[in-house]
Amino acid sequence: MSDLGARRWWAVGALVLASMVVGFDVTILSLALPTMADDMDANNAELQWFMTSYTLVFAAGMIPAGVLGDRFGRRKVLLVALVIFGVSSLACAYATSPGTFIAARALLGLGAALIMPTTLALLPVMFSDEERPKAIGAVAGAAMLAYPLGPILGGYLLNHYWWGSVFLINVPVVVLAFLAVSAWLPESKARDAKAFDMGGLVFSSVGLAALTYGVIQGGEEGWTDATTLLPCLGGLLALAIFVFWEKRVADPLVDLSLFRSARFTSGTMLGVVINFTMFGVLFTMPQYYQAILGTDAMGSGFRLLPMVGGLLVGVTVANKIAKALGPKSGVGVGFALLAVGLFYGATTGTGTGTGLAAAWTAVYGLGLGIALPTAMDAALGALSEDTAGVGSSVNQSIRTLGGSFGAAILGSLLNSGYRGNLNLDTVPAPARGAVEDSVFGGLTVARAIPSETLADSVRSAYVSALDLVLVVSGVLGLLGVLLAVVWLPRRVGRSTPKAAEFGHEAADTV
Image 1 (cartoon, rainbow, N blue to C red):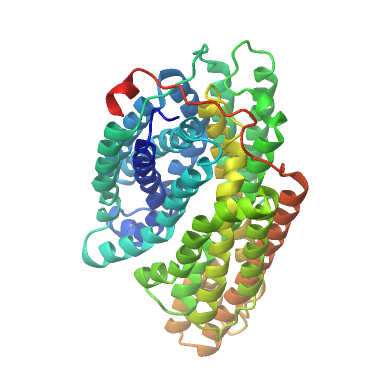
Image 2: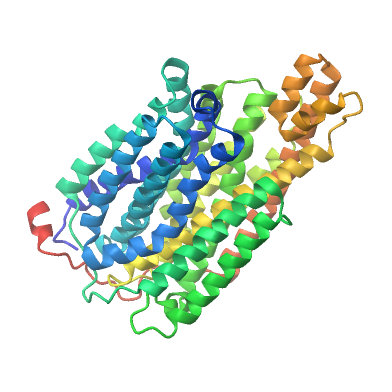
C-alpha cells in the first residue's frame, strides 16, 4: 500500500464528498413536499411516489452496482455515478409535473445506488487493517453528517428560494467530488472479471424492489393490507429464487460464501440494527421539534446538531476504543451508549424542552459514532480485492433495507400509538380523520375549532407515541450489545492483509 502514500487520504476526501451528496438527499425532500404539492398539484399518492421511487431504485440497484465496479473499474463507475446524480438533481430541480419528477427521482436513486457500494468497495483495497477503520469512520460519518445538515440547508433555501433549490445543493458537491475523484482516486477492479449474471440481477432487483415497496406500504397502509402483503411475499419469493439460482449458476452475482464469514455477517447485521434505530430517530424527532416545540424546518435541523456533535466525537475515538478494549467490547460500548440515550429520550413529556432532547441525542450520536465504524470494518475487512465491490453492495443493500424497515415499522408504531392516545370526544366527526392522520393535522384542527383541550390531547398523544418508539429502539440497542458480545469476532481485520492491486490508471493519478 505504500505505492499510494499520503494520497490515500486525499482519496478519502473525495469519497467523503461522494457520500455526502447521497446523505443530503435522504432527508432533504421531506421539507419540500408541502410546497411541491401546491406547485405541482400533486395528490397524496404522487407525493408518496416522490419518496418511494428513489428508495426502490436505490435498494434494488446496489448489488449490480458493486458487480459493475468489480468488472469495469470502481473509479470509472463512481465517476459515471456522480454524473448521473448531478444530472438527475438538475432534472428534479426543474421538473414541472409529478410524472417527470418521479422519473427524475428514480434516476437519482440509480446514481446513489452506484455511488455508495462503489465508495465502500474502495476502502478495503486501499487501506491496511490498521488504517481502514479511520477511513471507514470518515466516509460513514460524512454520510450521516449530511442527514441533519440537509434539513438545515434545505430549510434556509425554502425560506428564501423556490422548492427546486433544495436539489441544487447536490450540484456543487457533485462537481467537487468529480474533480476530487478524478485527481486523487486510483483505479481498482477485480483481477478476474466474471461473466455477468443476468438471472441473478433480475431476481435480486425484483426481490429487493418488491420487498422495499411492501415495507413502505406497511408504514402507510398497515401490515395486513393487500398492497403490503403481496409485494412483501412476492419479494421474499423472488429472493428465495435468487438464492436458489446463485447456488447453481457458474458465475453468481453474489458469492453466498460471504455469509460464511462471521466477520461479514455480524458486521452487516449490526449495521442493520444501527440503521433501524437511526431512521426511527430521524423520522420522529423533526416532527417533535416542529409540532411540539414549535420550530420551523431550519430550527428543527439545528436541534439535531447535538447528535451530530456526539457522532463526530464517537467516530474520532472509535478506533482508539476498539484498540484499547478490542472490537467486540468497543462495539458493545457504542451500542450500550446508544441504548442509554434512547431510553433517556423516552422520558420526554409535553413540558420537556430542548435541553433533554439535546442531551439524549448527543449520547445517542456518541454511541452511534463509536459502534458504526468498527461494525462496518468487521464486514468490509472480511472482503478481498476481488469481492470488495459485490460484498460492499450486499452490505449496503441489507443495511438500507434495515433502514427502510426501521422507518416503516417504527412509523407504524408511532401512528398507532398516536391514534390510540387521542381523545376525540369533542372533535366534530368530519374533522376526526384529519386529527388522526398526523400531529400536524390534529393541531391544525385544534386551531380551527378552536380547542386548547384538543391541542393538549394531540401533543400528549404524539409524545406518548414518541416515547414508545424510543423504548423499542432502545431495546434494539441492547440487542446490538448482545450481538456484538456474542457474535462479533475478537479481531475484525483480514488475517492476511494484502496490498491493493491497482490498474494502470493509478499510475496517472498518484
